[in-house]
Amino acid sequence: MIGITFFELMKQIKSGSGNFCFTILHGFNEFLGEQLIDSFCRHFLEKKSDFNYRRYYFDMDNQGNWEEIIQEAKSSSFFIQSRKILVAVIREEKGINLNKSDREILKNYLKNPNPNTVLILYFSLNSSKDEYRQIKKSKISPLIEQLDSSSTCCVDLDRISEAEVKNYLKSYLKERGISITASALEKIIELKGEDYASIINQLPKFEISSHQENSLDTEDIEMIITGIEPHSIWDLTEAIENEDTAKYLEILKYLFINGVKPTFILGTLITHYNKIFTAKFLLKHNFPVNDIGKVLQQPHFILNKFIHSVRNFSDAKLQQILRIIYQIDLELKTGGEETARLSLQNFIFQIKLISRKY
View (cartoon, rainbow, N blue to C red):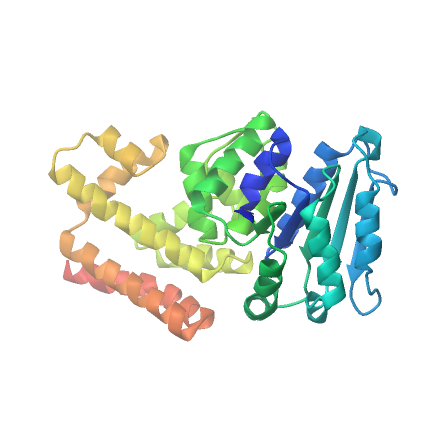
């Protein structure tokens, strides 16, 4: 059995290489399965129609017939007009357990599958992520093992790596004449964490948002993903540095009202102060200012202001601030978002107290 990722199969479909006779699509991120099926239709069929593309559902209302599906799979020929894509969609947990007769029908077909038909077994279950993990372990994985053959291609839609997402995103945008900076790619990962599947879901939004300049930078990404102009975040750190309580609380309120999560705000503050920490270290070791800007991916128009702020920070004050921020991070993980919101509101007052000491 060939086990590959969403990205690998996408590449093989486009190039026309690989063995697709019997493809199993499984994973909680099932919307990726729909993208693969759509790609199969665009590259394998001359024109999608009721004749060459059919779905068979296994659920409460439809008890799909495997004998009928296999007969249909055998009926296609090498003529482009006669190729077929057949999708068997299992939508209920009980439909995963094939009876002995159906298993034999499938196994016999897999001994000599029709190369002119793409037969897809697609799991589309109404379950939570935790429920899906249990179903996968107890039912889906055993079924996949039973259907193992040299003609079986199995795609785990949840097996996604950061490197694959970045490469796919760059390739997707490049095909549409859109460029994206390295810092913008890093910002996407920073904002979305390890939820790589949701990044793929954002691709149409990236494409639409770049229609004027055909390029995406860090500021564009922040606006697309958070819905908030990036200057509001920069203004927040500026208000902290100036110890402007009223402005800080006003910006914080604006961010909360617009749906920005405390995790994102806190992550921004952690990144900001860690950059200050790193910049102080590099300055002490006589690194050029422009090189520091490149290393820390600081926009050119705020670099001098940033370096000025770094020079004015005492080591002791910075350590105190980082201690407070990480304490808020701990409160977010243990006490929830409401606790974190209150802590972020109190943060500016703690900054003022620290300033009195240093």
